[in-house]
Image 1 (cartoon, rainbow, N blue to C red):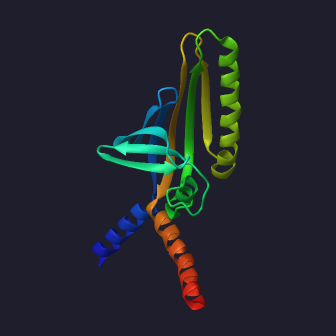
Image 2 (image 1 turned 90 degrees about the horizontal axis):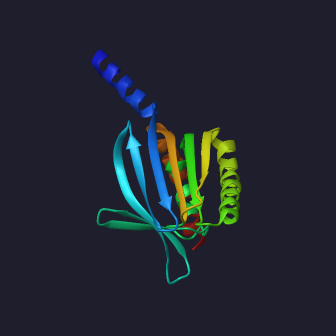
Length: 193
């Protein structure tokens, strides 16, 4: 009985303990090339190449290629689109997600055009702060940033490094809540037909 109790306490502690996941996102916008790496306890568990693509339906997509597999994320706010970024952000696993730390580095420049380089850097700074404001308010995340102008070559690169915290218990609870909310809708649709 004592062994069972100890094992049960250990399992519950593992389920409730927050897991810290590191993420590194790099994108070179001029060459349309980049990567995403995900680390668990300092060990890389995922690596994929990323690029942007504009398809025939006039839709912008983020293509994530891992080995021979390739998947796309539609960069729109359509709630009916299953691959939309907004649908992915509303996934039950995202509800328990907590961003603990975020570090962003931007490098931008145009050859022999200082005015364009400075204007681009200030635009990136304003855009970055505008995007980070709601994230900082929601998660109370520690954000560091750096902006490096380059005056002797054409470059536009961004590099994000972050620490995300989530627990298995949070994922299970949010998944069960989404199932519970989906069941009354399905019953209501059946009753209306």
